[in-house]
Image (tube, rainbow, N blue to C red; front, side, top):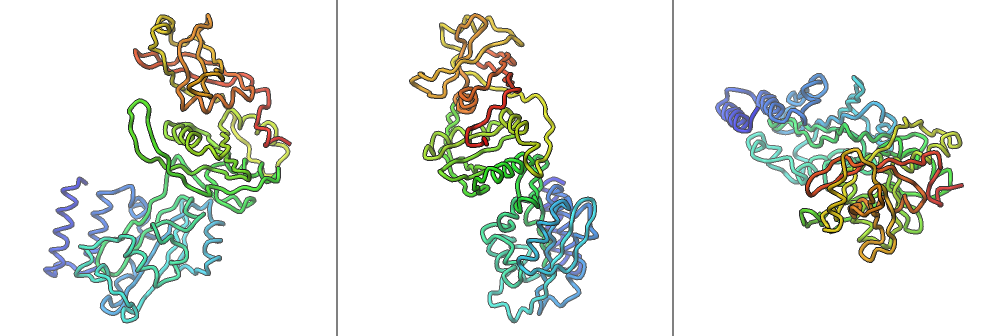
Length: 419
C-alpha cells in the first residue's frame, strides 16, 4: 500500500466513525489493518499471528469509565529463560502466554478506572485519539498505571537493560478506537542476541559468549556494553563530518576494552578507528577472525561450555591509499587482478604510527593500507601474524586487496589473554 492510499483509507475510516457507519472497535480494526498494509514489516507478527495480536476483549469494557491496556510482547523462544527472569524479578504475572513457531507471545491486560487517573490524555479519548500519537510521554503516562513501568525504559519504548539487547517486538492496544500500536520492532536477521544461562547475561553472538567465558576462566573482571561514546566523525573520502556513536563490547580493568568482531563493515571499521584516535586513555584491542581462530585452538578443550565454531578461511577486503603518487603510479599500473602483493610495517612513518606499506613482487611501494584498516592490521602484524595479500579490484583511483592470514597454525593472541 502506498502512502497516499494509506492516508485516504484512514481519513475515510474516521469519517465513517463520525457518521456512525462503523463502531469504535471496527474503527480500531480498520486503522490497524491499514497500518499493517503500509508497514508490513512492523506489523509482521500481527499479520501472521492474529490469534495473539488482536483487539479481542478490549472493547467489551465501557470505554467511558475505564481505560483498557493490552500489551503483547513477542520474544524468541530461545530466550525463554531471560523472559522468566524479567517477569520474576518484577513480580509480573501475564494475562496469557503462548508459544508457537519459535516465539513466545506474552500478553498483559489491565483495566484502569479513569476516575483514578489524574492526568487525562487526549489519546485515551476516542473522539481525539486518531489525531494524537503514541509518543514517549503518552506511553509513559499509560504504563505508569501498571506494573509494566518497571520493565520499560522511560526514554524509549525499549525493555530495561540488559533485556533491551534481545530481539523482540511490542504491540500496545487501548480501548480508544485507535490502531494497535507497534511500539518497537527489534528483530534483525544479522544480529541474534540471546541469554546465556552459564554466564547469566545477554550477549549478541557465540563469539562474544566464548570471550566472556574466557575472561571468567582467566579471572578477568568484565562489563558488557557498559558505555556508549559519541565520536567526532570524518570520512576521509567524502569529508563528511558529524557524530558517530559507538558502544564497545567488553570493558575490563585498567581501561582495557575488547571489541569482538566476526564481520567488519565500513561503519565498524570507522568506529574502531575513531575510538582509537579520540579515546587514547583506553587500551583498545580487537578480536576478529584472525585472532579468534587462535583463541579457539587454545581454549576450546579447556573452558567449560565453550561453544564450537565453524572454522573457515577468514578473508577481508581492504582499500589502499596513496596509489596515485607519481613515483608509485607506474608500479600500480603494472598490477593485475589476482596478483600477489606484500605487507610491510612502517613504524617510523611520521604521519601514522600504524602505517602498513603495500609492495609489489619487486618490493616497490604501490601504496599504503587506508588509515582505518592500518589501525587494525598493524596491531596484528606487530603480534606476529602474517598475511597473504592479493589484488581484488583495480580502478583508476581505487585499489582493493584481499587479506588472509597465513600462519594460522601459530597461536598468536594478546598477552593478557594467555594463561
